[in-house]
Amino acid sequence: FPIDITFKSTNPFGWPQIVLSVYGPDFFGHDVVRGYGAVHVPFVPGRHKRTIAMFVPESTSRLQQLTSWFTGRRPEFTDPKVVAQGEGREVTRVRSQGFVTISFNVI
Image 1 (tube, rainbow, N blue to C red):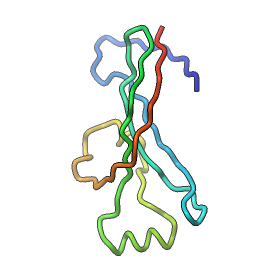
Image 2 (image 1 turned 90 degrees about the vertical axis):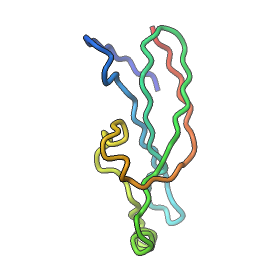
Image 3 (image 1 turned 135 degrees about the vertical axis):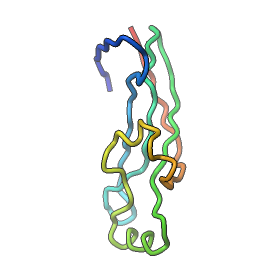
């Protein structure tokens, strides 16, 4: 998807990131999260290709896993900012879920 954005900053700390939330149907037709990922937007002019490692949150107990399977409500983040920040992620149980390749054309 083409995105046209202009940024202005006095320092590169917290440089803009693209956060991806990928959803898709499960076996029962429920719309569930298939993966989250984030990557920093390059600021050097040219064509840039980035590969984003995707991950999904995991239930912490067998009972929660069984309940989420029956109800079709799998664990997911309520705030997409969690994906872009490192704070609090060390206590979140996640599973690797593949890769997404994204291409930037920076002018």
